[in-house]
Image (cartoon, rainbow, N blue to C red; front, side):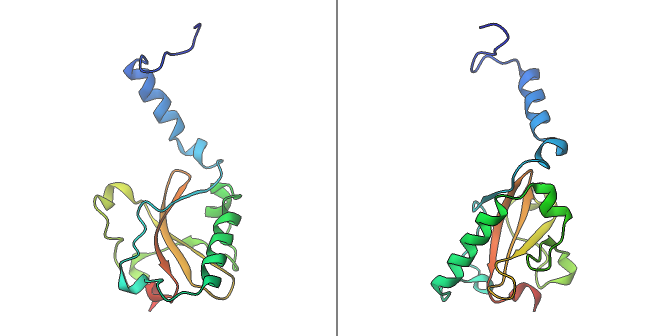
Length: 145
């Protein structure tokens, strides 16, 4: 076995150290961007995509595929006009929060990116480490009315 830790036998302080070192900003900022739909809200009438055409969903998947090749710091620190990737200030939009349980503990800042350069709206969500959690698909730009 040597220096390996047996599964389930790691000391509490070892588990804490491993978790803290993985979650440090230095580590995840150099990782590739990944996506989660855990907090996706398709029932909000302002962000309904029921009437969207197939073209929209193809563009959305293409954009997510493209962004999956980005490093987190590249996405967060390099605004691109065609991508419209930036933080959102709640005071500049029609909502003041995402409306999810324990939001204050979970969400640091809201973010957005465009589905395509000049159409198809935005994807609104937030980061936890290198994961972008999608909250709303803002096809009709309702967040900025």
